[in-house]
Image (cartoon, rainbow, N blue to C red; front, side, top):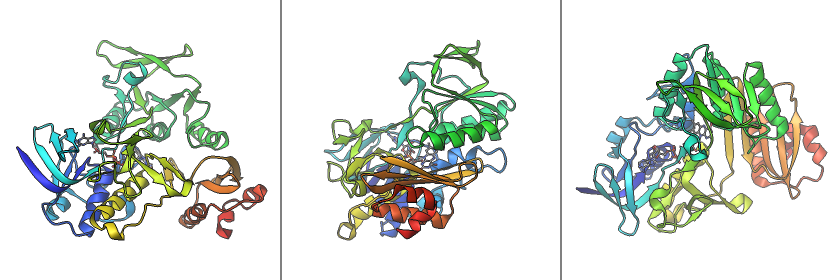
Amino acid sequence: MGRAFVYVIIGGGVAAGYAALEFTKKGVSPGELCIISDETVAPYERPALSKGFLLPEAPARLPGFHTCVGANEEKLTPNWYKDHGIELILGTRVESADVRRKTLLTTVGETIAYKFLIIATGARARTLEEIGITGSDAENVCYLRDLADATKLVNMMGKCTGGKAMVIGGGYIGMECAAALVINKIHVSMVFPGTYCMGRLFTPKIASYYEDFYKSKGVNFIKGTALSSFMFNSTRKVTGAFLKDGRYLPVDMVVVGIGACPNTSLFKDQLKFENGGIQVNSRFQSSNTSVYAVGDVASFPVKLFGDTRRLEHVDLARKSAKHAVSAIMEPRNTSDFDYLPFFYSRVFSLSWQFYGDNVGEVIHFGDFSGTKFGGYWVNEGRLVGCFLEGGGNEEYEAIAKAIRLKPVVKDLSKLQRDGVDFVNEV
Ligand code: FDA
């Protein structure tokens, strides 16, 4: 059993949705494009799962957040794919790939041939078992990567009102889930080995603002230690957690946010890899010229900083997908991808954005006891990164513009004095 398409996308996440829209803009014909996803729903804006989806009142639900609403583009419902003659194969996993023969084999035994392949398989949540702890199978242990995970989390929160949750991990999944748990009236303890939250991006000063804010909402931070093992009841529900520092926490539910791993195993030994991702050029083309990789799995050249990176950010998923489609369909009109790394989060009433690179010396600015503050990163005499909490659209646009120019900074104290206004003079 087999079918053939000109273009095939593996994965039905953020990048797949944005790629589909771009294909139609570039004039794909009905029957030429196929998307294969092991999720049972059409591509959606994944960040909604840790934000609007978890709200107790008026929560976001599909079809409300199908791609590409996150970039104020058309909303691609299942009917949209039908109307455009795009084959959407859902609930189906690609089990193996043969890039030499240009074929894929799905779990239902179908062989799908392609002329051009876009790998958009994203990442999966790292499990407790991968760090030597058992318990992921317990009904009250939740992860958050896809709609099924988010649905389980919502159901579990519904059963635990007034109870105790333990959040394992101090990254953005942990932080956003902790906020959602609080909003759902659940007491939260956050456990992570670092000395402050969001350690890969925040400075200790920035982190302490958010930790204080979370504490004011009742969140208990347990830092510098980690989960050792769970206590289960007779139905294998987790009832408590032993920490490595000897403490014991009684819990009603657990949320695990200990990182993500790119889904690249289908292509092991078939394509070149770098930074744990599929190595691509500035057109998102892999070491096999018929195969492109976008979003979380792509390790791509960041022209601005002269290196190669793999970034798990929604903005990159959207833009890389669009760029790869353009490179495939209009190669002559497609220039090299020139990306400014961008990341954001929204929790409670807070909202921040980060642009560029967080290396070098940090200069904090603004009012850390108020609602607007941030930090600049200066590396080798140039402004390379900026974090701002509580900014407006115009300020974020000005920051992005300034960071792209990597201006020379002669007087570091000016950054602190001028604060966010500094970027307007660049
Ligand atoms: P994505 O994970 O979206 O899609 C991959 C798809 O491939 C999935 O449908 C998966 O099931 C499918 N798949 C994998 N293997 C397959 C196979 N073998 N066969 C068939 N299908 C397969 N970023 C940000 O910048 N700001 C934010 O606030 C957030 N918030 C956020 C919240 C949550 C809960 C998550 C999980 C992630 C974020 N992110 C984020 C990160 C952002 O969502 C992420 O970078 C993009 O979704 C990546 O898009 P991709 O299309 O690459 O993967």
